[in-house]
Image (cartoon, rainbow, N blue to C red; front, side, top):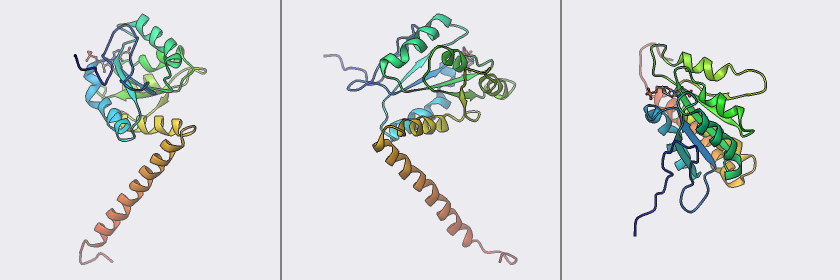
Length: 189
Ligand code: C2R
């Protein structure tokens, strides 16, 4: 028997898919698979937090109908948060946000001669009524963290994992200070 896929296939019709054995809670969309190296940071974090996600490539410029269909159907499929990464004239996160009331987190991708500032402004400067929560250029991991924090509002188990993650971040700084304390210089007091 053919092994079932554990992640949904990329498709151009905006149907998306769900991981086997559970519905995706987060939908990761990227404007092109050239964005994948950055967007994988979001996938890695969601994997660590054991949050089911789907991933698809869609483009407001290249597949406008598919984007609208995806955005209109996402909530009914059980998606709670959408993370959309795009570079250059990044219309994608905003166009998705126009057709859903789900929170949309935009990830500006660095990849053009404008070093991602083009995508940053495109995603950030949304007109009143259609917000996109914008993270830093290439900040895909923060997008996943924010998505988890949003879902933590109603998911106690996830809230506890996020709290533990934050404690871990603090411990990293404590260790950094312990290491810095060991540095020896004549004028270091
Ligand atoms: P290619 O590498 O496929 O030429 O794409 C993608 O996100 C990518 O960063 C180059 C860049 O174009 C971006 N793209 C958008 C959109 N569609 C593709 N910003 C969109 O609809 O916003």
